[in-house]
Image (cartoon, rainbow, N blue to C red; front, top):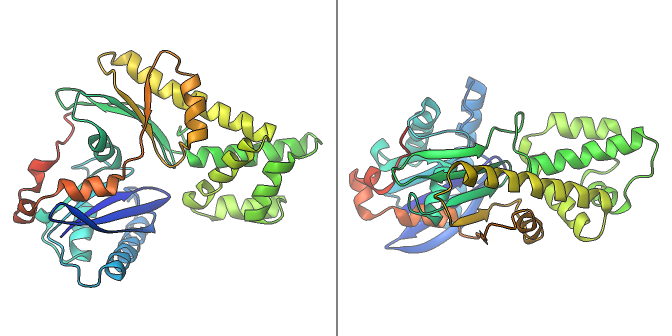
Length: 310
């Protein structure tokens, strides 16, 4: 059996495959490649135990031969990728040569395109436009993390909504009714002590989980939420437009990710009138699991995934 993992800052999706068929799917807590301290490494070990439990709960008699993991916040061969490869091999009792760890964006791209065949816009917890050229070299715009970028992603959407509410309050203006009601349904009172504890005392995934409420409020006509969503679509369009301008040979375009709802995608296309963009809905963890073959368990898995050249 082969395990495909698509790990992001909001959650982990996994798929279990055997003989080219998907046997099971599931979720687990978020996992990233940000292993810059012993505390973060300890957290990663704990998250992998949750992943292990999720897989075994869905398929108690699982007998893994190989793992292919796409994890946000790292690139293949980096120290964090090597550390996570070791942790995954220990967690699932596999030899390290049976485990591959790559950037989540690299594997997401390969779920849609062969190198040189197109460009990908991804809006999940964060945001990035990404492609591999025909020589396998990676090119990107955006994807600089929540402190330096990620405009249009779920974390950014949630942060912008709370910022707007606080500014409106400071200006002495009435709060937007629909957006306020939706956020209150999740957070309770929107006073500063509540917001401070939530924003500064929670993980990124908790803040990002508010993004669907912003989209819902926009769809229901809330003007503040509509302005936030429109700005998100403009920022995402800018990422993809810049990438295609810098690499004009890439003509086929796909936009995907959890924050890119059909509503946001419609706005995105309106800001890219000269581009034909496809709405992507592929399950990347499925693609990762199916990319592995029985030969992977014998140590040949590295041949199955093209690593981006530098």
